[in-house]
Image (cartoon, rainbow, N blue to C red; front, side, top):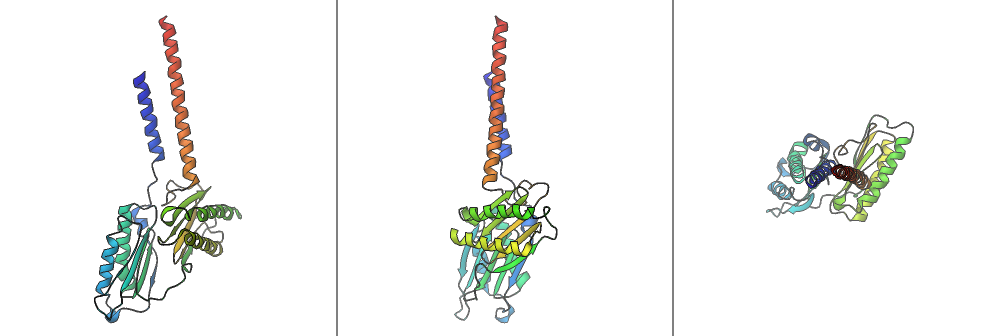
Length: 292
């Protein structure tokens, strides 16, 4: 009987591990899809990118497998040339290898997308990478750089906007306390995520996401999906009429959704184990009675 109980316990543990295993991120091809690019009008002298760009790329690549965000500069050997600043930001749910691969792909797109521009910004689904010469004009961290909205309408009437509003409220509350400025959540059939640049304070990150939410509500109305990219953060949302898929279409479910799943699965497993033990105990009593 002891052997049987151990076998049951092992089976219950295996069930828990299978059900609670973290969702896989989006397919690699999706991570590398270009969202938007931004290129300076001015180009480097002679129309050729200086060696500092290659040095910067190497410095960023060296950190991409172990960090989701990294910012650095590469000084020029020539007094007549300015140093170059650069950074990368991976989505918070990416693994180290996926982040590294995404950053490498984004940096390789600098010259493809922007030639020898003195500043380039490439946003892929999974990551952002950029460089700019020292002293390049800056914009507000909450300036909208890009937006796109789905063509189809969501739930009937204004129901989608109500559900989306609840998901956005969870984003605004959660992103300020989450690690790395990343937070993903779902409410009913709406999945949403937010990502801030890693050097923003929690307060500035929350404020940036709030601005992005206001933009997407105005720009996308009742569209079934939308993305708004500000200079220092972005948000995306999607409506799934048949339910949010496992993994949320690329971002792990966060906050209350995960807690509910854990509680339901754990409670069910414990109830199943208790029922099996009761049945075995009753069976042993019947066996003892038959022996007498």
